Length: 491
Image (tube, rainbow, N blue to C red; front, side, top):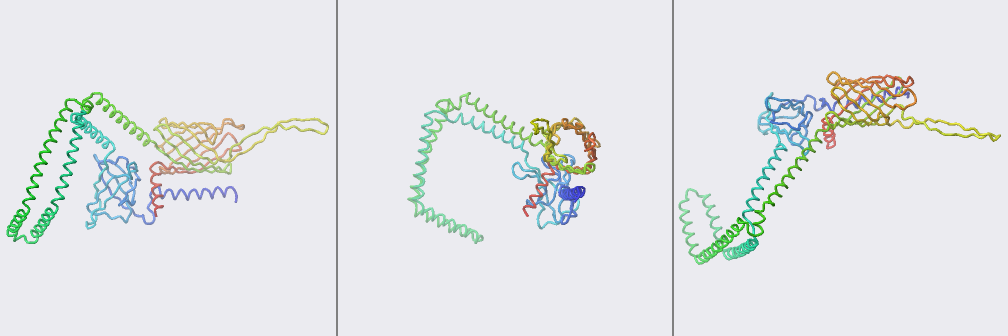
């Protein structure tokens, strides 16, 4: 097979792969999903929700978010749903997330099963999750309540004598519990009989309500008989209750004495509660916690602002009868700065020259020494590792271009649909340095682009036109693609 045929076959396979990615990424209706339906929903806030985010019912993916726009003071979201989804009156939507830090998606609730179908053009009502800032504000309010509780405890506890009295109170409570348990065990039979009587009473009241008056008279007579039979036991119970109330009164007097000493600042606990240094230390600790929370929010905010773009491109060089491919990513850490890392299949490889001194000895004993230069071409896998800065519509890049030092200038036109680039690198090569590359790239869609240009115009042996195409996946595309892959894996 000729080199041209290989290039043609490679381009055909690449176009087939691009077609598959286009169908998946752009959510083109195909097969069972053809003829999707569109429903609109309004939310108070859709913070964190992006276009192409999943739409689920009972956790099952049934569509995507097609468009997000502002409608008055609310956010109106257009949902593209599979044709088999049926919504009924009473349906509503909710913005939620997968786990605590998972991606946001829309959860649909289709409405009661007995309700009629949803009329066309109905705008669903939506609910938004509680914002993380609101949770932090609530935590701060809880912290204030804790401070008030601590201030109250400062006036309620303290002193070694108070500690002793607290131990005495606990001992009294233990004895009271033991006596109560003993009293209940001694009167278990009577309590069981009483409960049985009340059970009979409730059953009778439920079944014979018209005869309630007569039943009440009978019940009163029965209660009188029970009281008469257990009069002595009831007297003992009343005596025990009197003794219990006297013990509780003594415990209350002790507790009042302890709280009074704490309020005066007496004892260890009183000094601890009323000491200003302790209050200051507690306030400083709360301030440290608050600063730590703020630092965590700033760190998470910076990480959320990072953007990742994955690039795949291939091109053919008709003049050199060869091709070039590249795969890598751009990491945008700020609005103006990004880092690029790509693996490039170079058509020429990396050329290395080595020098070797050779000495020849002739039969007459004469020696002749000369310098021999050898050229070696290593593998064609090279690397692009660059840092770039956006200056308005212009971008400047510098770093490694196909494993050689260089720089580049990009100019964006027509609302970023057209990009013109000039790259210059490999300034140390022996023939016609540097290596120049002129390219014009046009984005057919936000993800797919085609480009053409002129590669290495200064070296006639390698000078060639270039024609190619590529695809770019951004953050939202990668999230959707990974979600699609996970759904296929689950099947």
